[in-house]
Length: 284
Image (tube, rainbow, N blue to C red; front, side):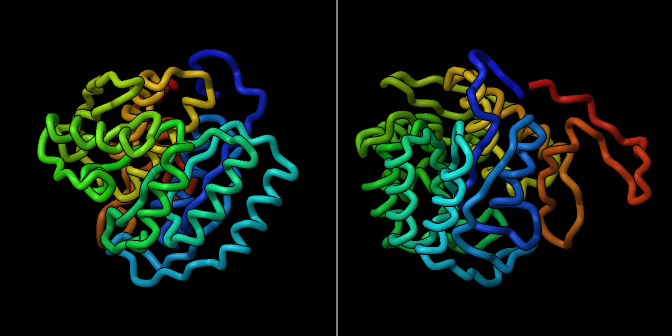
């Protein structure tokens, strides 16, 4: 595993979110991220999306009792070291998930997924209020992009100053810590933890970004589970997401999905041969 400090007792990470039929985001991105970073991923699927690199065509939400059954099944058997939440879609779903995480005491990253990178709204308006009320105060850290930060805080994020204002407003709502992701802010993430602001400076890389938000939050959960401080985990997650973008694969007609494994394994041909284009290894 990619550890910073004390080793977690369990090698299991949980993703709670939607399934992307195109394989680029959601549960699929999370499980790939967990695997590359050395963890066993389990999942509770909240919705099935008809989705590809061009956008989200349909969303089929699962009944909340089905999600509750998945969560019960997971925690009846596995000891989960850390979790992350993604697409929750409805108020009822938020309440089921928050109730289970509260009862089990599983620490988690809250990725307040509202819209897909490829297009399409994924969180109903009435679910935002429930998310703020029930999930946000429980999370170890909340990871909005600038649009999600605006939806949560009411502040339009245009630069680092307004990103800090939004982070503080979200903390006022009950969040323990906030990372306003800086993909639209010159790749500078704004971290608020313990009332203190830290800037995590990244690098702009060339490549497709479909699934990068899910990949970032899943990596953040993995590094936190591995004993990293929040700052160290956020920095490593940022680097992992950038490498996943730079190794993205043009497999559709729209936005290329990020490739979590590319940073470790290079690109394999359909015949199982390592191609001439290989990336230097990512060492977590």
